[in-house]
Image 1 (cartoon, rainbow, N blue to C red):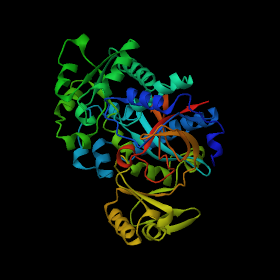
Image 2 (spheres, rainbow, N blue to C red; image 1 turned 90 degrees about the vertical axis):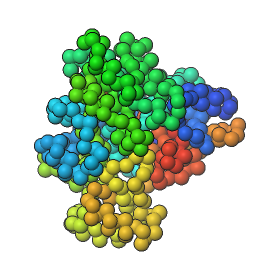
Image 3 (cartoon, rainbow, N blue to C red; image 1 turned 30 degrees about the vertical axis):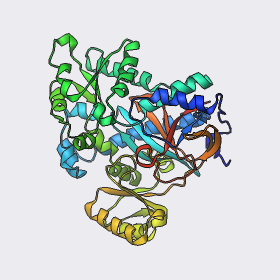
Image 4 (cartoon, rainbow, N blue to C red; image 1 turned 120 degrees about the horizontal axis):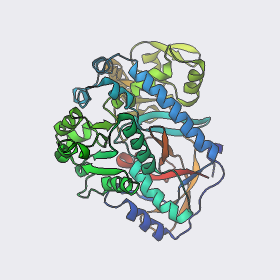
Length: 436
């Protein structure tokens, strides 16, 4: 195994037979809509404490820069919608108070990070109450806690702490509305949402899951029964695709139920923000520029213009076409690896056409390809009983809720494949990473 030094030398060996581990993993994640995976993890990924701390330290600092970069694009929501050329579908679900919109846009975040030859590289920031990771990491950790005695970070514990802080800041009762839909998970069970509300309840924090049709119950009631805060566990594109009416959500927002992350989080999630930050902003300090240079791969908003690459000036459009082996093309908005094109895996003619079209629209970015490094992990085939050690190139997803680190979701291919690593779009596997 050629484990990169950042991952350290330690790895967990299975402490139970493969069928036992598989059964436990299936049981914990049951009825949540989590897709089939040809390989399952037999353990978490072990990280040295210094690497684990570096990941969260860098994630927190970069998220602050992402937020500031997005907000500076315009003074108002309307100005940002225009600057980002947001589709009409995203022109809704804002609260009337712009200060609340801006202040609470970044409360739920998960960057995607790979370990390159020189250490962590942050490929993108997912900033949304609907991001993947909390439920999946909670379920995986329940198994690893029993099998390996690990006392890792708790996604639900961190999110409960975030909501307690939020209730104090807003001066509202500690009551949390979890807004989503079982239809979004592709199952009839509401366990995906109930897991979190029940966990909150065990901590003494009242929480309730609401389908959109029932959301009037969060505000159309006695004052002491109202929900002043909540989790927006859905995306507009997903609900549009399912034909789910979002009017009840806007009504709840208009009646004082603040759902995080706010709609302004869409600007933070846009790859355009990564491009602006990578290129540098006038207000950045020397230390902030050094942070960006260390942890962000070179990223540029793709238009027909000139920019810098390493220590020289280049024509960005021509450079992108000619240097496709070193670059990745990403649309500003997209999920599960959609709207991503890796230059080295694309035919030259197809690449040039896609680059030219993207440059005309101006809402995509081109990013330097990072060669992901590998570590050792024990895995179990779904159709077999023998665990084996694999060399995997994981995508790490450190979860941040407010200022609270909340665990690390990890996606990988058991055969060591790299590229677009997606559980839903590419049958990747998942586990979590823990400090040892």
